[in-house]
Image (cartoon, rainbow, N blue to C red; front, side, top):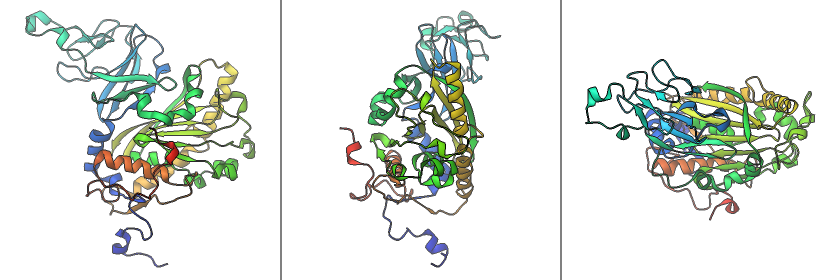
Length: 425
């Protein structure tokens, strides 16, 4: 097979059809990235943290969605709410700490209030403006506190206690409706009793956020992971199903992981999540970039924040049951970190791989074709999940993934993007 010159390198792959490859420019183009923030990230439900990270009234966490600063608080009524972390006075970011509590006063303000340090305007946990410094002297009766509250955002606590935020006031679906049947495989396991975050770390990766999604969505790359090959490559593993659902979501089905095949590891059945089969493994990949990965005894959640065309921040959380005994919690932490901690068996290999992709797909690189054309009856190495994701992406962006200079067009009718039984009504 001869090598290719510049012309043949750019040609569509022979034997594959539209929908079975994408143009690398959707990973690297600055204009496309900026458009994604508006057309995708501002239009979807985004999981931002877990309610166990806000255990007490007046606790808060800050984050960004599509470059918009967001603050999530728990009020004295125990309810979790989300607001733009922006003062309506002069547009300053109100809270710059990543997390903490408003129960005690800050140097600029009173206890139990969010206080903008710039001019000492204060807001309560419902987002109402509670105090304007020298209000009467400066505004007389021309400005009312009730008219300068914070920008409230759509916020729900759902699916094992995760906090979801949507920037779009026109979002007409609840999180349950938006996720639909994609949640079903783990819903009982995570909702049976309260969960708690026991591990947190983050990484800033030099790659486009969609590349991290891809490595969560497809398992053909298990050839990368020695641990997964040793504990999983058998008939049951290769029969696992990839199921696609409305709104771009994908579920990777379960099989029994044989941990005892890897030296130093053993069964995790003693601390399985409720309703989970012994040593089972399910994964839910939510559009546009939220991942829930449950290996029986520990739940891993990836929450991503796109920073630029070639940079993404991933926050990794490990969760167990709040009711764990010290011994159970110790076992869960060991199980989680031995696979997914910063020095675990798998995670660093994924990070190295996507960094290699990011290095090869920078904005100045010539366009190339990225192949998603494997068909294996929706089983584990079928790339149907990625075909489904990028078709959803194309519709929201009105761009053709295989040529982003053209408007979206549906793939051929006989190109499978989802398993028919997986569709919601």
